[in-house]
Amino acid sequence: MTAPMNFVERYTAWAETFTDAPPQFHRFVGYWVLSTLLGRRVYMHLGDDWLFPNLWLVILAPSSFYRKSTALSIGARMVKAVQQDIMLPSEWSQECFITLMSQQSHGAMVCYEFKGLLAQLQKDYNFGAQSLLTELYDNPPEYSRKKGTTEIKEFKIERPYLTILGASTLEWLINSVQSGDIAGGFLARFLFVSADQKDKILAIQPKADEAEKERVKNALQTALTFEGEMSYTAEAVQYYTDWYYRFVKEAEKAPEGVRAFFPRLTAYAHKFAMLEAILNGHHPEITKDDCRRACLMADNFAAEIGRLGAESLGKSKFDSYRLKILKAINKTPGIEHSRLLRNTNLPAKVFKDVIDTLKQTGEVEVRESGYYPIVAATE
Image: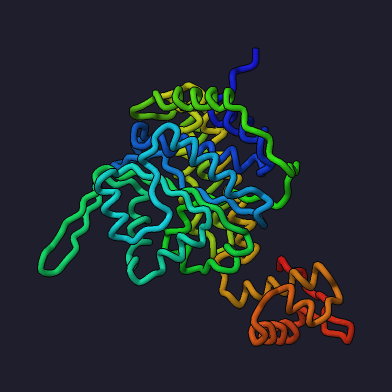
């Protein structure tokens, strides 16, 4: 007898019936929905810390035809249908954010353009906001901050719990993110789910099945009935331990610029193990199978980060420009100067500096007919 679908499975299948976003987007947005609404009601004890299942997730795809915003909107509406007041505004100042979270410490942020969030964090009036979010990721028992000179005000966030869901293009992420952003710890707390191809195309989206939507919501409500401490079975402890030692060895081989992501993935394995146990009705135990599925997800995220590292995530801007030009030349050997400049969309001086370097290092050959590759773009 086939087991009934759990919330994430049902949510993914339902969303796929009326949108052509890649299915992995719906799947992990489904996990984010569950994570968001669970809040601090479930947890694990790790040493002297409490680990909660909050997810910070960014989906990546080349263009709007991948329905990134659509996937995010479906998840946001599902959250609002269950608990409207935990959704945070997409634009905010640091003071406004602290005030909101001090009034209600359980919050969810949806960033349809992830670069917009990073841009906000760079503004003068938001100095320190990135450190604030980084600290809140770990869900401390309390966050406090004092402001003012003559009149000092103290803001306290009791039992904070924050989830973030965003979307971006892969190209923007690779070209914009620098190693300092990763080493600082903020970006290393995010999971990235990417897609570069689609299995189907829908010119006109059919109407969503409202009856099935209610069944999806009912499955979600069932998952939200669980609360309290969770722990691994003896078999799951052994599985995680074996996986952890292997994972650490593999992480040492990761590109240096993205190595900061990997310790966080071991914590995310715990978080997904909790979510899997809840979805499969095993709470408060986390079984070996729950753990196995969670560790497989962590492995897949590690492979994704490794690929992004190979694509130059975390390297210098010059390295990113170099890779961009090499890719364009590899894609169209013999490409003429004007077309290459137009396709790479780089300032003329930057383009010239990179081309001169590529010629000097012997990575590109220049002929009268155009530019030809000598070294593969992934090297």
